[in-house]
Image 1: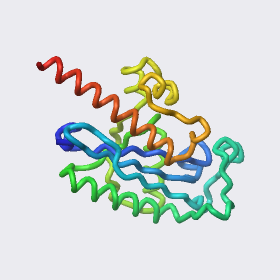
Image 2: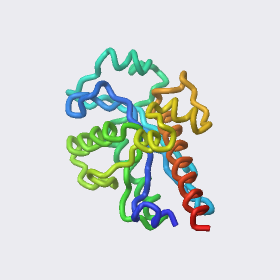
Image 3: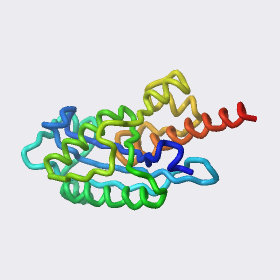
Image 4: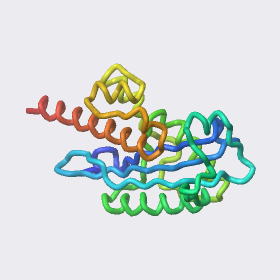
Length: 201
């Protein structure tokens, strides 16, 4: 059971795009969550959700960050919502998934997961959200998993070693990065479980 695989923690892949590197000063611009499901004792990708975010009032969006992300905050097709609304909606979906698998709480999975986790913590504080579904300090980082499984730490290189398609032109979209990170996470965990099962036999 999924609840038994990670000590009753529900793995949820998260990717954020931000206006800089300081979680206290720079705004969140995109939030994506990729839920993880279970099928025949294997981890698989579940539903994904992405939110375009209006920069929180008073926080900084660096021009260099926008250029790197190729993001136009004023694009007419960019339908953005308030940070608080995005967090509450995402947390509601995560809690529904957590209940489905009888997990005690969620644990954030990410590539350089500390970065995303630190931004989420600050966002919860400034929006006075007291009940985050995520563990307050534990995370699962695919950088570490990738280094162990493939001797690589860069997401694109990990994907190459694992035969996962990685499209450079799609990178740095929160939804795409979350999906690829989830594929990496599931494949490494499933491969490890297969090895343990073979050893047991």
